[in-house]
Image 1 (cartoon, rainbow, N blue to C red):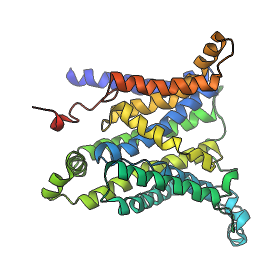
Image 2: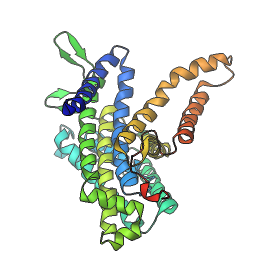
Image 3: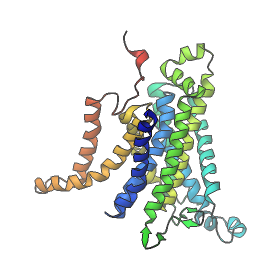
Image 4: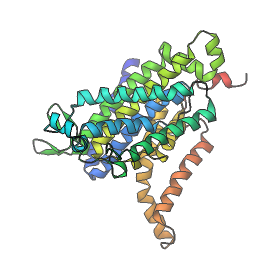
Length: 359
């Protein structure tokens, strides 16, 4: 009986997630697109939670791995390289069109490599110093992508990369609607199901990591690095592993973002992005997987939902306040209110911080 009681909510939640895009599709593809972006941010937040929540390493340069994955897919699935390099065009006369089964592992591996490169020089840094260095790393990657159009045009600079191939999965082109009988499944809905599978797989990996020996070592480092080192934990390797594992999620999310958008530019990876991703982890409940998912969904959907609130508020002031400014004000107020009312996040971990409480 107890097993059935636990299973019923899971089955209800799974059914709701499967039906959600089909319901939203009736109100317009824009709402499904919001759900798609929310899933991508959930994927990013899960990866950052490994670094910040489990290992306690404040990483403000996480968007760099997002950019690496996106640009990797953009270069390997668009005419950009064949137009810039005649040798590549001669070797691939039909253009570069890498399959999904190759793109995802390559994107994850490349992002993990960059994660280790970021982690190596920051092993002795903590707190604010670590945050500043990682923030600088994220900005370096963005500026690098912005200027890598001369003397050889690789990233097309601020103009970005367009004509990126949509994902094709078992012969199904996710960039085109799918007709099943007399019912049409929109392209954004197809991407939703792909993103949902990736998120569920990521949740499983993150959950297993949390209760593994590696996860417990990360949490020991988070609570007290000196004590963890004294207990025989190799803090150097564990930190590098946290940076690398977290970066893989960012790389995969970047690949999906590039395929979904069909266009990427350095503006997509601005300073605001890492701040928002960190806010998702902190506001949801740092170190707690359900809380992180909740924070990512709320903060990613909030700006779009507030578009429908800012307009009426502007009308109430007879147009004296700009709708965009009101929207930004409401977005800023929401996290402040949450932090005042729920300092540990909307859904904090039940055991997080127990060791720091006074007895």
